[in-house]
Image (tube, each protein chain N blue to C red):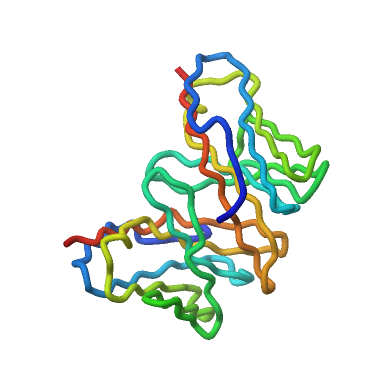
Length: 110
Length: 114
């Protein structure tokens, strides 16, 4: 079983709509959680960290559910530029090693 | 913007050649990483380093080797390239910020072995 699992999508979203997706992690000792964004054939870039109480950054909202071992990302008022693959990332040690999910592809259409 | 660089960006090379992929960062980060990623697939950690003279193998077995003689430099070497090594190789470094680690990625090297 993979340590971090994501629905690969694609999620086809009309411009202006809201899209949300989850990722599950298997290690209950996981310590830190992130969403990274990766554009086609580019390197991943940090989108946001995910905090226990949930957090918001503009149109993006991240939630963590430790009991059920999943994190979520919600994108409001989708823009064409939000089209990308969103990587769920988890750390299980204190040394900065990250476990990446395979990514969820989001395609925002006009 | 993160200051982490990789060269070459693209490399096409014949089977059996020795290659070194360069990665440098100017942020003074102790921790550095190499990932391998095939198109449309997930990243796999192949090597990491916690500091100078420290190197460890990652989760995915790789025939490549790495060295960390200087903090800013973390090259990856393939002694004898094979077509199965064709992939994208991404270098990253990290720092602890507010109790958690954020990784900064270089632009990657796209390797094709013919």
